[in-house]
Length: 473
Image (tube, rainbow, N blue to C red):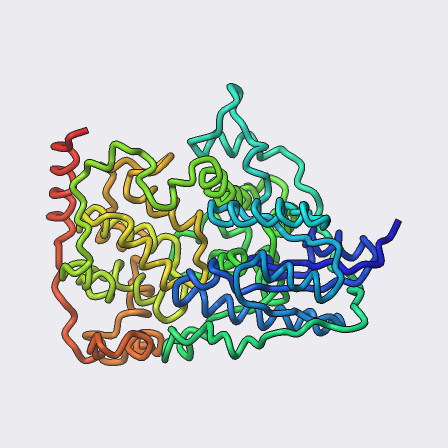
């Protein structure tokens, strides 16, 4: 029977109306639906760029709800007392949300679910941020997968439910509770002048995400296997930004690829494999939450990585001034667009952890602050994969040579020319935008001389291999 009491739908990293199981269930429950976003410690702990991008996403989501005749109620503070206040103010008898899988969210959500149930409130959490719930994918012996390929084989033929449609209407209460304003939160203040540079590259909200997906599956999917590694080509879906905040769901990506699949082609499958790689990162984070902060392989605790971020090589890496064009172009792309091509990410990460012998946590934390598509599981997994300390990681002795990588994946230098201005008589607008996005304290100008390598590619590789061969584990 329908329940006439309101339901709170607590939005987090799931800023969409379609394929949203919690919203769908709340509408079907029958009473008024009150959408809520809470600025709690999880929001305040975000880095500068991810927090700014979240603020944009929340604002856009509020407008999407408004178009449905609804509202997004904003509150700040610890989530449990804020939800209890809203329950008291609205008479709500149910609270629904979409699941999160990082350890802090699990701890928070478990506490809230237990406490509200004790209060007599109906509480439900729903899947949707990953394709397959982490506890549902097991090896034949009952453990979790530590290597991607068998993980892919285990799930590739599983049924993925068809995405849910957005509700045609969202029942509203007779009166709305008070709401804070997004402007008062000032989520973007840390971006300073960088916000104006990055903003044109943002594709904000669910509608933009669906347009991105449609353009990709409609005209780029067939070339995806060949172009995805070429950073100068627009050969990827570019959906990481939207997936990170749930402006689109992985199930929507999965089914769109399947619908676009051509007979005899493996392009759709290749794209689906990359969507499942994202799942694999969440699978590992859920089973081994130490992935986020510690070497997944504990023997790497004894490796002699540098952990001093004040060293000139680390500063040069952060500034995109290592003298290695592929590395510097990747870092500058991140400062201007808020994202970085995946091939560049691998080269950038390998150079820091191997050529510069720096701990992967330095890079992980820097990306946490600078990426608008930051994702806790994928960021940690990517850095540990590159460093060699993680599950299914690239072997430490496999050192990406940033010079030969550039020759292979950017032979005509279109990518590096786009992002590096020094030494160019007519640098691109994007290359010049880097100087407007970076902190003023760096005092770097486009007419500066491009630096010599802080560590030569061959020298850095030899040093890394020597350290690996002489390791104590």
